[in-house]
Amino acid sequence: MIRRRVVGEWLVPAVTLVGALLVWEAATRVFHVPRFVMPAPSAIVVEGWDWRYRFLGHAWVTLYETLGGFALSIAVGVPLAVLIVYSPVLRSALYPLIVLAQSVPKIAIAPVLLLVLGYGAIPKVVVAFLVAFFPVVVDTATGLAATPPELLDLSRSYRASAFKTFVKVRLPMAMPFMFAGAKVAITLAVIGAVVGEFVGSDKGLGYVILSATSYWKTELAFSSMILLSLMAILLFGAVSLVERLVCPWLAPAGDE
Amino acid sequence: MIRLDAVGKTYRTRRGDLVRAVEDVTLHVQNNEFVTLVGPSGCGKSTLLKLVAGLTPATRGTITIRDEPVREPFGDVGFVFQQPVLLPWRSVLDNVLFSVEMLGLEPRQYRKQALDLLELTGLSGFETKYPRELSGGMQQRVAICRALLPDPSLLLMDEPFGALDAMTREEMSLELLRIWEERRKTILFVTHSIPEAILLADRVVVMTPRPGRVARILDVHLPRPRTIETEFDPRFKAASDEVRALIFTRRAER
Image (cartoon, rainbow over the protein chains, first blue to last red):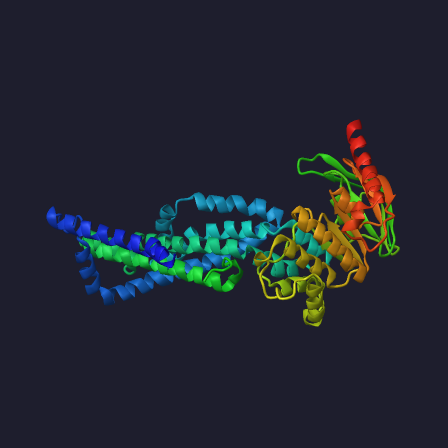
């Protein structure tokens, strides 16, 4: 049983991945594909390794822009969701604005933001925030509204205050929803930070991709892309880890 | 203990229609009496419980509890719903303690009583489990413990066994009677099940649908403590025939 699971969950995808890389490597060699069109995986790895120290600095920049935007999306999104759920007036006032903000393509706002906020990290953080905050608001609001009405009746029958009910019932009830939103938000924040860097920057992994392609250094662009994906996966994993620590009751019985 | 006099409740739906949920309900419940409310869906039974708990105001008539008019929730009440609605992030013990916590009491002082209640309901050894690790019947037992812990004088039960399978249901009814024999309380118990209504009650309130009115109040003269055998008593059959006749002839008239 256990062996079959290892084969199904790890071996098959690993073999597929390695096979695809080998085919790619072979194809670039056999067909003499120019490096700037499609570099071989080995060339990407070599280039990435040469850049390892410089990558550290750029990755750090993109990381803190991402985390800044993500933190801001939580800090703004959660209270906004609370206001929307608790006040019908604010719901009708804010919801159209939020949906409007969401429907504007963020890539289109980025140049304007740079114009307004200047060249540093702040506009990237803001773009990351704008991209990430919508799922936070929507999922938190959904979660807060998902408390069974019986529980609210129960709290009221005990004369508990609205604040107490919020802290002890509604907020924990919304936790799984909030984490679902946060997981989407963290991956979107990476995209937001890179978009911000594309529009105008002199550091960060997005900047590396952009400048590498303008010098025909495709293998550098690829290694930067891979690094970005790794970062997104790690950040997603970190949020999932926090979720399991904060919501241990969600782990299915008999698991682990 | 509870007096409902000519109580009516009309509410407006989201679409603006007026719905008469209950109308002209008069019911006087004695201290420590077990009263069941039985009737078809939509006869305002659940609304009646909310009115008694002070969760929603009556539009007509008066409700008093120990001669105090009910205008808002008063705390001295335990609620059990069709769904257990436990808090999934809390252990069984902490779920039981939830009621005293919400009442603003010190949960640590109720630990011992909570453990006693869990023992009384056969849940010893499950204190640290999460609700999802329990069966539906066990979850509902936890919900009953939660309602009993602050020792309210009034217990409101809204189809508490309605979501359970038939066998668990019967077992739980008898268990509730056993608990009630040990800790007397006034109980208002809403159900769809005629046998359940009779097995449990001192008096059965038969209600008519839309708007909910009292068709008749029946005294159940069956000896206590009641057991499985009670259902073979000819008086049990007579009572259930009477209730059934009240519900179905009315339905045929419509």
